[in-house]
Image (cartoon, rainbow over all chains, first blue to last red; front, side, top):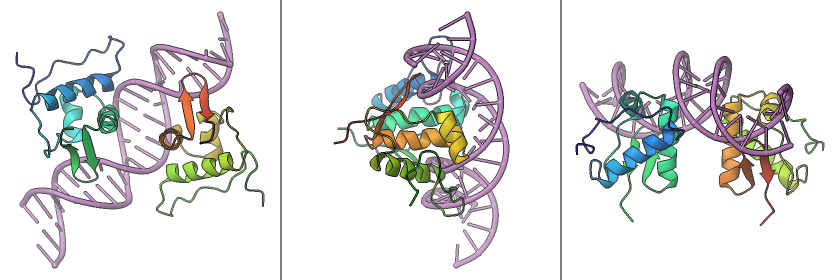
Length: 87
Length: 87
DNA sequence: CATTATTTGTACGTATGTATA
DNA sequence: GTATACATACGTACAAATAAT
């Protein structure tokens, strides 16, 4: 399937009970694991992700935070969220 | 001094460069260490702290999150933020 | 080197949902 | 059943660090 193309994603499910930020987390994690974004590379900016997923930047930041806590990315002010080398 | 009374605090410094949420973190931590709030007890609600410090609830939540990450409190939905047993 | 644009951080506000008291 | 309290999600504005021109 075409689920690993950059920037093309199914719409989030707003009635699923699963928080939007968790859905974003899951999608980005799959894309990272699928090689769409690779270690050392930056994820798209928060604004960009906000447009892509049609959610508030706040929601994107919540998702990115959970990716940080999971050790998947590190976020640097003014630079972006960088994929960590896989463990 | 009277720095350890419940709910009576100097105003936060908005020009200090230190983020408001860090200031709130520091004050609450001192009060916890000073015995104002004790292990097993709950901190005041987010709304209450918001009024006390005259900052948005968002800012209080940021401070509480950093206290969680520091292992000082645990937050439970519908219940509040409970002081952890000291380590 | 200087200016502008981009990007994340802080801080405010509002509304609604969900769990607990 | 009502009130309280935290969680999710929307929005806006500006500051600060970095990148790009």
